[in-house]
Image (cartoon, rainbow, N blue to C red; front, side):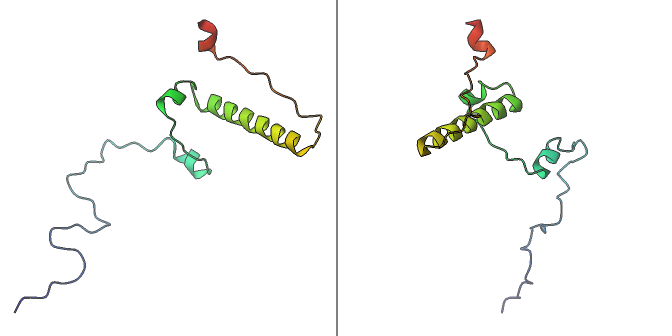
Length: 100
C-alpha cells in the first residue's frame, strides 16, 4: 500500500508566501509610478507609430481632451443643441511637422 501524501504543496514546490533563495532583490528600487496608479490613473500601451507622435503623457492627454471636446461639440450639433460657448479648436501642427 502507498503512503498517502499530505495535502498542500507538492514535493519540491515552494509555498505562495515564500521567496526562493535564488531571487536577489538587494538592488531593487521602488516603483516611481506607483503613486500614479494609486490615484486611479489608467495605464495604456500605445503602438510605436502612435507613441512617436507624442513626446510625453502631457501631450497625449492634451490631444485626447481636444478630441473629446470636438466629439462632444459634434454630438451636440447633431442633436440640434446650440451652445455658443463651444468653439472649434484650431488644429496645431507638431514641431516635427513644422521642421519638414
